[in-house]
Image (tube, rainbow, N blue to C red; front, side, top):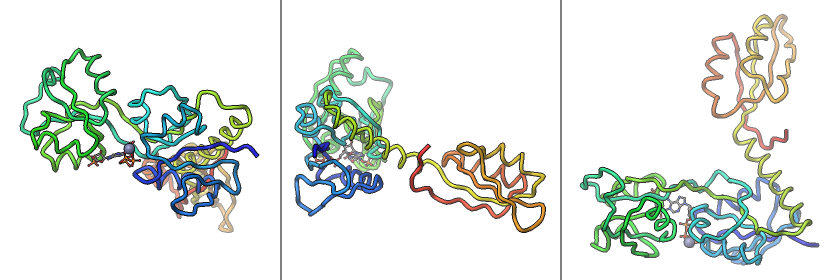
Amino acid sequence: MEKLRIAVQKSGRLSEKSNMLFDECGINLDGGSGKLLTSSIDFPIEVLYLRDDDIPQYVFDGVADAGIVGENVIFEKGKTLDIKEKLGFGKCRLSLAIPKAEDYKGIQYFNSKRIATSYPNILSRFLKAKKIKAEIHEISGSVEIAPGIGLADSIFDIVSSGSTLFSNNLKEVEVVISSEAVLVAHKKINKRKRKIMDDLIFRIRSVQKAKKNKYILLNAPNEKLNDIINIIPGMKSPSVVPLAKKGWSSIHSVIAENDFWEVIDKLHQNGAQGILVIPIEKMII
Ligand code: PRT
Ligand code: ZN
């Protein structure tokens, strides 16, 4: 049977989350460690483990049909691929940073400066758009130490928490792109593989929606039901179940994680009691 071949980072920051995503989608991989190509026993995919830098090329060439990789790598490699889905992990930004003690008044600062980076293409596109003439020094790792050892005046690198910059006496002065892990696909995959891709995306979305929402149960006096239903409208509308105690009901609904604390406050103010909030595993609307 035809399978969709997906390239995934072999070992690094995206590996664990990528494998976890398959797991959460109910896709079990026949994962003897050290294997470069593995199949799922219960879903028509096979996973090819690669260095993240190689993933755009493999997908572009059609050696893999799809891949999970950071947007930063895709933009750097400049390959035309279909970005199918943002995956919500591996979030970071690509930023310009300069020594802490330097005065920074704007992008003009970088004129005639030497900038060390592993992302020369993204950087040169950015500098060109801003009409800045700087010298780009491409290095493959430990970019953050370049200014300290006199190799460059500044850097262009991935920043996440900012602590690497901080401990190297650098400060972030321009965010050039934001990035996260995405599911990408080869431009032309056949109909059968497209169907597998759609099934996979459907599962990914169900998992992601579930993560963004919580199941909520609470008790309230009947005269407060309308007010409470307005606060937690639910997917269609909340379930209301009478309690054994006369004049009281239990309300079940779904709330967005982002609204959580605000909603809880309002529910309290409107007489809700015994509020339980429970994670949702999958959510299909
Ligand atoms: O071996 P392989 O080539 O496959 O892996 P790699 O070493 O090239 O990449 P890896 O595993 O380090 O990162 C994979 C992807 O994770 C990147 O391409 C990004 O899309 C994403 N990502 C998310 C990050 C970070 N966060 C991150 N913080 N990649 C790297 N970093 C590094 C950054 O380079 C810097 O040195 O972490 C440091 C900064 O972190 P903070 O938290 O101190 O700011
Ligand atoms: Zn890499």
